[in-house]
Image 1 (cartoon, rainbow over the protein chains, first blue to last red):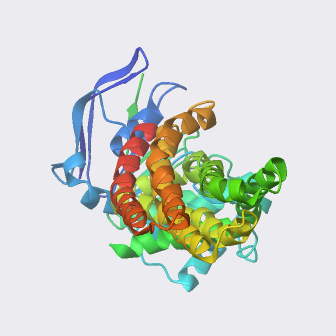
Image 2: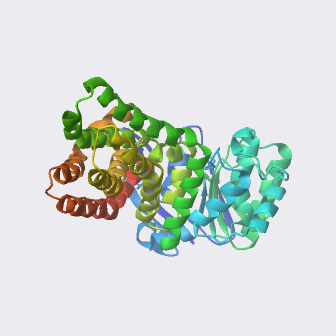
Image 3: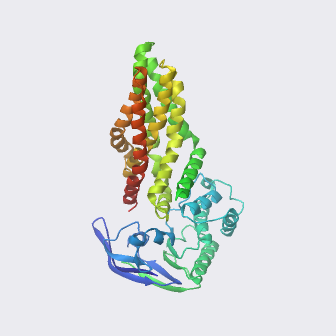
Length: 204
Length: 222
């Protein structure tokens, strides 16, 4: 269970939001909405512990995320607006090394399956610098296929994807919610997520 | 615990192998800078022998500096650094892996090529051996200290110059004892004392620097 209480965010001189709180239970999805610059990404970075909030606290399973530290990060999967893939490595190498660095065990067959699911079959061995923007995004999203950690924090996951891929990703997120996972995401395109409880939070 | 260090080393080495131009250019920089001195000074063996340790070490410091700005910058730009910081492993251990990988592609090649360059300065066999040993033992400290500077200047515009200003003064002890070891051998005093101090500095740098860098990286990621 993820709880945020009385969060305040100040960037530069400006206060983006204050007194923000929510509670997310297993199987729930939180849609963050708001205009550009409202502080959606800042809120996500607070939730993953990279940006300390000006005020307020964030708890994971009842424990402050700073104190839970490694235990919290072991439950967390974050997908930012940067893809976190290495241009010089192939999609397969990217997926395997990302899993290893995140402390997950992933065998090569599962990784190849995941890449097939995101529509990169036959391109496993091509360096990522030769892929298009959308394909690079798909390499990053392939991490979600094999990820079984309970908390997903996704920053604009639908950007650069075509219609079919958007549907596919909505399915992946539904599957995650059905398994009892939680997700927090920002998006400007409202995409219907077929399963789980969807809640909305509007900032600004 | 050690698994993560090895995973990071393996990943960084693989990336370095895909971009060999970076390794080779730092190495050529070292070779050219060192070779310019005998050409400029002229064939005076006594003078060259005296200059050799200092010249080789200063060139090694500068060659190490060349690759420092990219130590974290690439990972920062493509978002990998965020993922590393969110890994359930301590960031200090991950940075330890990056420092070791940096040394393997920058310091180690310098040490291997240094004895060949030393011949240009008419150094004796003993002195060449100590020179290689000193560079081998001292360069890990350079990578470690450099990591702190690279982390502090991450994302700063014009960070390259600032990085040199931050890091070069901290390299002075390594320079003094590294060059001193060769000097002492040439003058017959024996360089063991200097080498022991280099080893101590390397251990201190490898043990402490990654955690300081990790703290700086967390600030850069805010």
